[in-house]
Structure formats: structure tokens, C-alpha cells
Image (cartoon, rainbow, N blue to C red; front, side):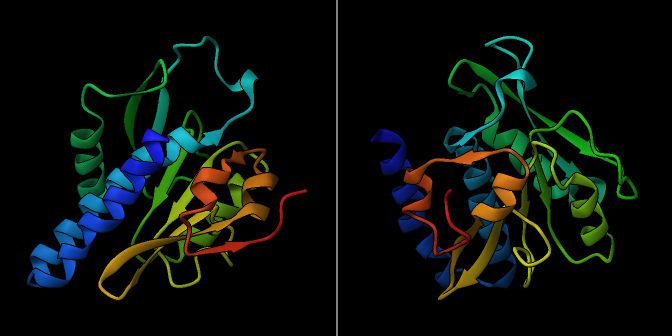
Length: 183
């Protein structure tokens, strides 16, 4: 219940994005996205065999071109855990199509490589989070959207299930749109 309250608080606090100037609004929007990415980890279940022990870290990856998001994520997760698991942030080369060792991958901005990177991860237990106009359509599990000066997110159950992930009904309850259906 507390986690749902935190998510709802994030939704309310992000309303101040509308009152900030463009640069401040982008910075605030990115801070909200970083907080959401961290909180998503509490509502996703990965295959057990993916972790070598109960205290193995959850690794969130970003690409080099998203280094500013990596910095925000590092600030957000500092001294925090998901359950008993520490959280690590890893920056990957932009050109990589062989993403390994991450549980969450944030693909922000616009790049022709995103489609190829998502395709290479199809069927692998990685929560793919994008910030694209057609994020879910290209295979992302969660896609951010800016709507009414607020950060919202859509979820693709189809993509999550393809990647062997289970998304909690509590997270689904606060999503703007849900694509696909649970089996």
C-alpha cells in the first residue's frame, strides 16, 4: 500500500512541471522519470534464476547518450534498495546490440538504433523503458509520455510477457494505457 502511495505522490508532484520554464521543466521531467524507473523495479518480477542470491543487485542500464539520466538515476537510487536488493546503475556504449547484465534498460531520446536494440532483447528478461512516440509499438515494456504537462506511462503486457517479466497489478492500476492482456 505504501508503494502505491509513493507512486501516486510522484504523479501529484510532477504537476509542477507545467509551472517551470522549458529547461527547468525538462530537468524536472527527467527527475520524475528517474524516480519512476526506480519505483518500477518494485513492481516487476524477474525470473528467479536471473539472480544468483537474494541480495544480488538489480542493475538499471542506460546508454552513453543518456548519461544525464544515468546521473539522475544514481542520485535517485543512492543508499536505496528494492526489497533486499541493492540497485546499481550501468552506462552502456550507444552502439551496443548485445546488452547483458541489466534488468532494466532505459532508452531515451531518438535514435534509429533503438528498434534494433529492442529487437535484440526480445525474449530476454529485461524491462525496457523508452521515451518514444511509438515506444510500445517497437517493443518497449514501459513507455513514458508527456500529457497535460505531466509525465505518464503506458505498459505493454505483451512485451513484458515476451521478456518473461510479470508486472504487478498495482503498477498497472496507475498506468495511463495498458496494451495486451494478461494470460
